[in-house]
Image 1 (tube, rainbow, N blue to C red):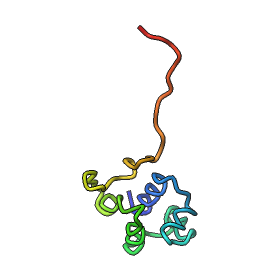
Image 2 (image 1 turned 45 degrees about the vertical axis):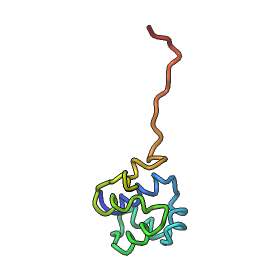
Image 3 (image 1 turned 30 degrees about the horizontal axis):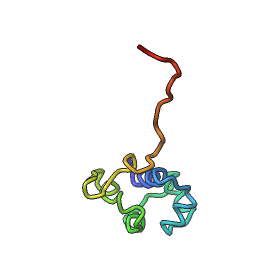
Length: 97
């Protein structure tokens, strides 16, 4: 996964639109769209801009090394409070046994 894909994963895990992510991170909306569309490469300055925001500091280790340390509060987007997608199963009304 490249840095642009990781930023997108973080944005989605936090339940943010590109516009809201732009507002929080301080990046221009067009810049985010270009990164997510694969038109531009994400540089270190952008990574620093994102991880210096309190909301995204928990992803720093994963973003830079692909590792996590939950005991230190460092997680991957899949482990975020909301997660990238809501998962679950529907129960049938049938009784078993």
